[in-house]
Length: 343
Image (cartoon, rainbow, N blue to C red):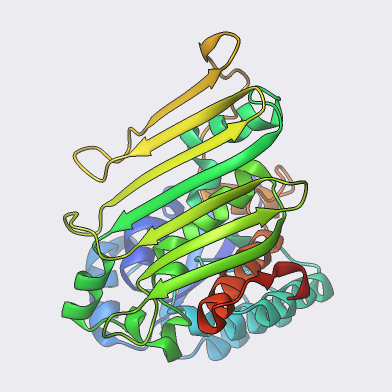
């Protein structure tokens, strides 16, 4: 067996203990060696949840952790505003980086990350898990193989009870200083990313209106899109929808010259089994062949470090998400369309 990769964790909040650590501790080629977490309650929960690694070193500052432990790689799951400093600092310390979405909070920060990555010669993977899920892999395969022809129009809607959940709990996600933006920068980041990932469309011009209600960050976004090559579309992100808990309802339709893709996910009762259908003008519903096997960001991260796989959700994707998002924020603030190519 090859030498185990030494992993440092930056953040021990819900997503780290609920997603990343359970995946990593199952692997024989990984050793979790330390965690950075400033809140003692999160540290105690971490130790109770994972007794096999409860004795690892705990730090309140990531700089101290990477300097003391020299991990091969880090996994970052912290409030959005801290991502850029933590990514760049970890790269400078010689670590590969897996970071939760959104990668950063501005186009400028995204370019800083890519520059730091290239200078360090390390891997940066953004944890957009949809890149690894069957429905979206099938969607991308259908487009890449030409099943629906040239994309002409896209229509995407995401709905979540984000506003009430965040406001009632007074979470950091409604603080612009910490989150960098509202629902567009939170759950909305996933649907922006998957639109750009599966279609490979290049946004040209964006016009957006947003509603914040009594918050300082966006809740609802209505975004009109124009792409290079002539495709157009609409993206609706609704953060004030009556769905239970954190469940998400989504509708995605991608229209092409030869057919269309229809996707729907109801947040309940089983969000793991979305509806997806590929339909052509000439033959009706068709099967998508050659769909890659499902995986996770964590598995792809380790495989990429080991040289066995390419990075499936690289920093360039994080840059594209921020270009569209920043264009939407600017447009909403000025009531004017924004040319994405100027960002």
